Length: 409
Image (tube, rainbow, N blue to C red; front, side):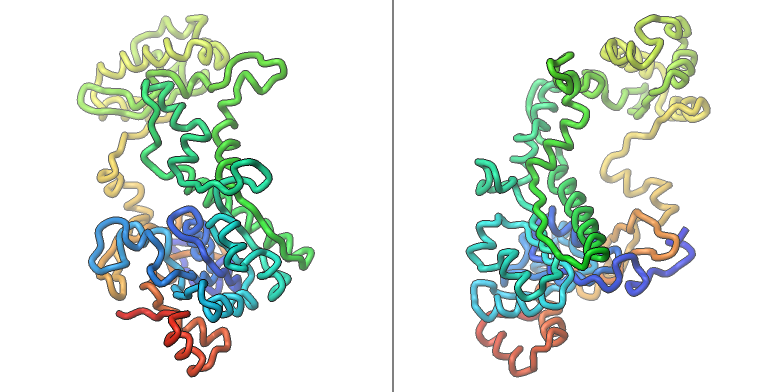
């Protein structure tokens, strides 16, 4: 595989030569741009003087370099500009002149107040891909509302789905909306770059969280209301079954998912319930879906009869999909992830040893990778301004005015 046979180089990665001016903060936009950086794009991270808020979330050895920041901001260069100062805004537009992508994740109304609309940015670079990822589509009544992951989880039914199973609505303990919309932003930008390769035309892209996650959730949960008039209720019943969860064994838990007819036939034999092979409730996927609560209750009952290790061995031999149930800590020790080198200890230039996660995708001819670790706040301000054509006296003037800031360490 490329990770083992080649040392990735940014100049040969899939997005080599693409330059991104990145105004995003927190997790949604930074994940999208980090993935572009993992593919070799030059990501110019524009930060306010206080920096991206995630610089302060989690443990840290030094100020502005907290744990959460590292895994959404590698493969980026940090430039600090105060966009509320005319010289800072002018510097940003100067950087946009030579960029391929301009991306932000504040509300469009804020970009308008800053004078950084698509019209303003495309005026200095008509080929620019101008992408906004934010809360809500701009043609509806929610257009100007703020959005965070928790709010979008609630508004798109995710918290309510959890409540249908547990009896109490709760947010998933991961930023599912931020990360999903970050991935959507990535593919939207890549599609626009491909279009530009064919047509020569730049364009504006809007990636609203609410609409994106509504589609994401309702893909399977529109269910009976796909049809007009409805043939049933919303909610994919298998996913809402009370016993759809890691199964308790004699000494722990196991994740098992017999799915096909053949899986279930073999599972009923293993479980000592061969009579269920001909039970009309379980003979095919349509009937199993109608009786999914009863079926999963049977699985939960029989799983308690053996240890986790015994079940994993039996299920693997029978080619029935199964996995151990990891905790966050045990995932770090997973033998598969160890063998593929997914978690690696690396030396950060200023922060000492950190755990870096590898790029999960492999390209046979143009591998991506970690080409630089997360930057200090303003670490590359001078370097990038110099590349943009600013002279040393001009850079000094920007610093003196406070329109630009360089790293202090």
